[in-house]
Length: 214
Image 1 (cartoon, rainbow, N blue to C red):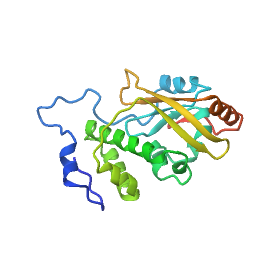
Image 2: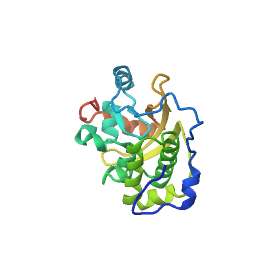
Image 3: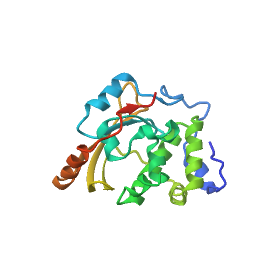
Image 4: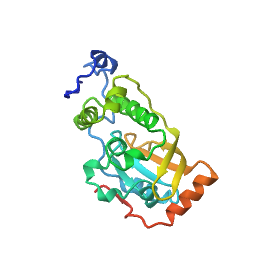
């Protein structure tokens, strides 16, 4: 599979992604990813309160979220469904792109995750189009994409610069439901007492509606 954009990828990129051949068994979960959250998973996200949580597919499309996650980032209902994408927010959204203190590491990790998803889902034209958009619109993404890193990381640490409550250090876990392996449940918690105090202040603020794409 090849991404056609105005910015040409190095030739080595073509050989860096595993290809599916006619003799390669087709994945049981191959095909279009979920674009809505199954009701049990949507309830699970809501039940993670007071911890911020959201459900994504392999494209980083955000399928469900709770009020705490909406307060932490933004009211996702204010975005069109096509822009409820964690990587798009990180790269292109004018406010969210400035949230991460260590932005290059966050973008690097996201690029490596997307490359792994691209290798696993070569039939996903929407994912290919999303990557092409990122390469065209964000020079940092294009540079990191050309480095060919592939990674899937289910645990990590982020530091956010929140405009309402200041710096928040977070630890996160990413879990995959057995019956919906294409989806990822991200759960965040404060990494220290100071960050917990900031999260507590944040949770006292009004938030947008809890939701999922429908």
